[in-house]
Length: 97
Image 1 (spheres, rainbow, N blue to C red):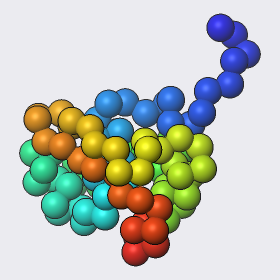
Image 2 (image 1 turned 135 degrees about the vertical axis):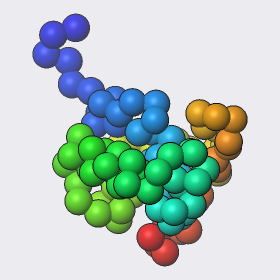
Image 3 (image 1 turned 60 degrees about the horizontal axis):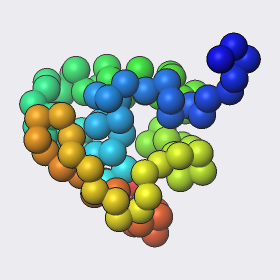
């Protein structure tokens, strides 16, 4: 539908959402890359693309945007590509990011 506004999260691919869920769960880059079976540099490139798509530049800005505009429900669990799973932490846990 022309002219319809979509939340920024709608611009993300499934892989972007998998990366984002693991970032929100508090995992470090090396752990995210391992879980998704990708190289660390590939993950860094993916994070840069996610930040560009959403207009943010840090993990904290990403967390704030997603909590405000459309993160999965806190405590919700979902399957990631490759069969891994991720539980989105409650907002209080995100203060560590």
